[in-house]
Image (tube, rainbow, N blue to C red; front, top):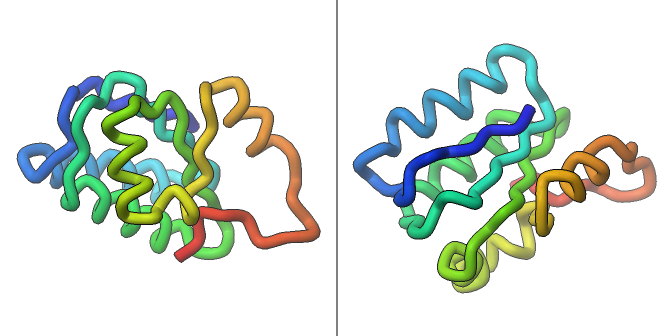
Length: 112
């Protein structure tokens, strides 16, 4: 499932709505989520917290991947070192291809 937030800012003002959307997708049985952040220009700690809680909700049976990350948001991932934890791809097609390929030899990133 690909989710594309249309908000320019993922921050405390939309935290609850953002969390509801991500967790609802997991509750509906989607265990491979791609979050297309191409419209997002700003991300704060509350937005990151929602993403981390979604990874935890997915557990070992799912994965949360990201694509379309703009420079400022990429900087936030880098500063928090979440770029080492999350699966980050340059675009939707690369993300889709990566999640379609089964990974048997290693634990996928995106698990906390």
